[in-house]
Image (cartoon, rainbow, N blue to C red; front, side, top):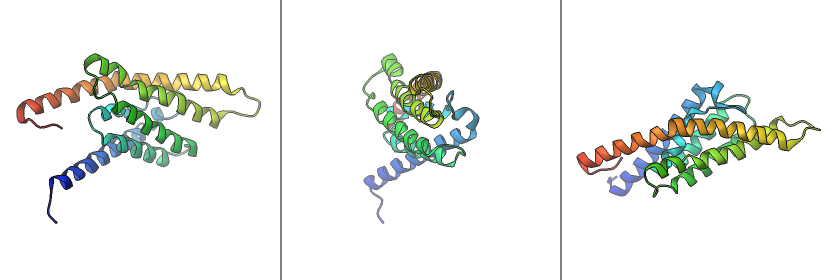
Length: 181
């Protein structure tokens, strides 16, 4: 088989998506005590900002989240489905912020993962916990705020430095070789 630029690009895309997915799943599972629950600090969610640089991070994050949620014990089916879809939606929306630059990008890019996970995972946790006679809305608001706070900590304290590191690496690579990551 002849290796063409198109084949090479497709292989690079798939490889990078697979590596991102594997890293997301491994980080999530290694840090299971912090990665699940109403108050969670899923360190792997800092990677949800990678779609700013790599379109292949979108499917990679989706698959990595699905794998982590499937493999981890005691995770409700709702979290496997809707948690993975929340990650997919957040990654897609984050990718739409590529055109922003500097501090605007750093402050705006974490918003989709923070907001979407707060809304969706807050609901999943509440649906899993609510008992007959419980009031859904107060419990939901508490869970959504809790998940959102943990997500904000991870995305802003770890994700923003990740953005700046990748930008610096890309700038140096461009200056030396003219190539992109």
